[in-house]
Length: 566
Image 1: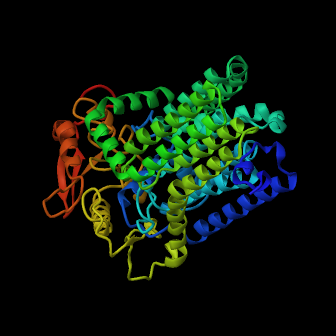
Image 2: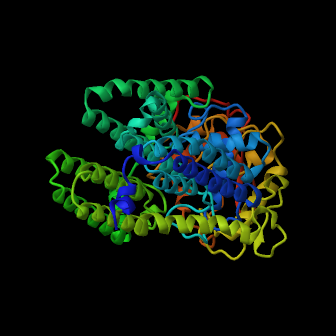
Image 3: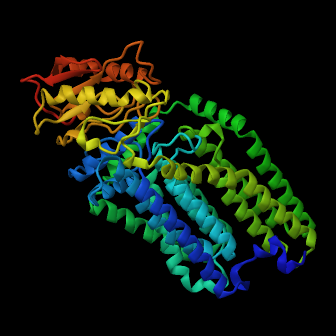
């Protein structure tokens, strides 16, 4: 194989490719993305198999945003507002309930695509940039949580997917210099970096911390010239953050307080346990990444590289491996090690470093580089992308939300939840019960509330989010958290005060927990009652109880306070 036809030579910087190849790659990426968007738009959302309760969290915050509440100022949430703002945008476009989540994901993909094109096609050869673009957009649109199979269709933990996409783009931008022929785009490129950094800040703080580390490392590694260029990035970041605050899309100081409170509630022991679980579950991919690292060092040795090339390779591997372990272990479901998307991006960066080292050196180095990219595709890209594409293909197979007549799905009685389908054959354990029993629980709660509340009543739910206010069109209660999970978003020592959570509510719903519920997380209610039960008993009276819910009404002399108290 000659150098012109070598896979490694194709990894060389964009100075050598033809303009026609560039536009062909961009058009191929664009057409593939349009196809995915069309499938999700026409046939989505999917029938939900796992974690149906998580979809109510997305709909709940979107409803609060559309009702005029400011995220983090008017309610508590340790997750940033980006994903919820996208769902609210989907609702604003006229898509009710779960369809708004699908369209929020589409909006995200439409915004992400030009960012990927600008970053990837200004740094990589068109074929590789096209591959990266297709991989990341598929990652954004897939209808399964990372770490699960293509059969387990759901939009649960959607913010994790969006975080991986944004972080991958930013790390490509930070770790690979822009091509010399594209340097006229320098200020646009740096402004884009500020946009990506701000979106990561509003997506999930753990992804943002990794991104900040990468940007800081880039500035330190490349010296004083990079400091001057990075001022554009930093200015763009703070400008976009200020815009979010000015548009009332987030309360900045309250957001930082929510993050601080959640950080204080974290169980460090369980985090280390999750990292160990991830290492065991992903031992084959991680071993493969270690082999890639050794191959990279061997290639550098054969190229007689200087010490700083070794340092760059080691730092790149440490950044991507460390980010993968820390982030995946902290993301629900990903500790299985089944999907590690950042490692493919890391290998692309490593291959680029080796190409710079081996430009004038022996053929063996180029062949090692080719083997590195092939191994990375087999280990990291193809398995994740195959499952993601298969999950989207299941929309075609099952007919998506339009297939309401099928015996394989269960629907809700509420017209507002038309299109929210749950597969009837699933035994997945969700928060308080099995997934297939969730419609029964929600319908039971809606019946209870319809008998009691009026259209002006404010409701709080001491459970896993509020599935009722948005469904009934009730004005959302100020202060009520979106979700509370013990040792993740709160504990008995670090939590929002009782008056903050319940002080604005007229009614409070509490799930009825019994040994026959077969849920995975019934202890949530026990922890919530341990924290808020005293205030509830002092200010509210039990009025009604159904099979699955207990309803409390505020005492006439209970008052409505929003500050202070425990």
